Image 1 (tube, rainbow, N blue to C red):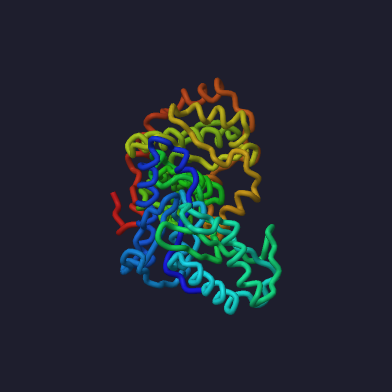
Image 2 (tube, rainbow, N blue to C red):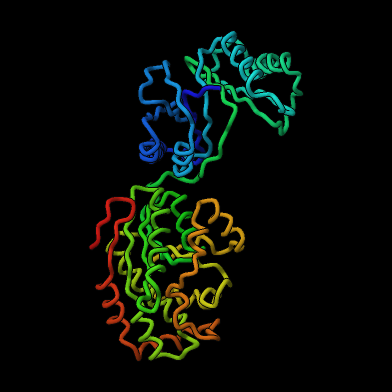
Length: 402
């Protein structure tokens, strides 16, 4: 079946009441940005959906196009989309729709064990109701192929949607990323390491409509250049979901070395994390971010016991978002594989998280003891030094360093 349009459905935008037009404009804006890299397309509003057509289409005279991998990727990176259906738009005449069913019977039904036709009427002025039209169009296919009709979980579902001046026929519905449109929920700053968790945490917060910059704590010269290159690649993957992002690279190896020489070994992991949060908070304020995002997960490593996360979190007054807090590790891995970050995250290059880590780190830090240790260290000087020497890379646009 040839395709001359893609119908896009969305759900959460409907819940926004008075701000619905604004959320819809953000959805269109994000979708148009992604489509720009996939070809010449336009986005039209169509009742409770969006319709994507070729830029050369005029009115209902639509130009055919191919739904290739580039186009599917563009939809998959457009937060707010629930599903998208490659479709053929035809005049809403029963005889023409029946001819389309004959074409589907001839070209697509071989080897199909069961099917159904599902009709939705966006307008109610069509002479047949949804059930009557589904039965009539399904009958055309059954007469030609004798393929069984199965109303629940058929192998093939043919969707028919009656529009004001046309009908849309589709045989494929592809799940979108869901969530809220990019840029509709404020700005955040992701603490991006080279591991599996933090890119997934960033993705999950972006999926809720947040735009995002990232900060990485670079432990060179104690780590290799490949460790930083890995993080830059992960940042590029996340930046593909929005108009680009700033990646702030904070030189942190000297800070860790100073703490190693000034504090009890068991407390180092907690002290490192508190220092990272302080640095991230300063950068977030400058970047006008409203919250810091981490890949923390309860009990996964020593710094992520509930006791330690409580003590670490008190190093900043900013909101800290931890979207993976209750995930199982395999759930995180599944998302990482789906969004394409997993293979990069598992490259064997250590980052600051593995630097100077004691063999038996503290798992139940006491805040009073931590504050007593920090009182013997010029914390503000270390933070100011690290932040002042940080580097800003623009990811997703022509590279610029500041």
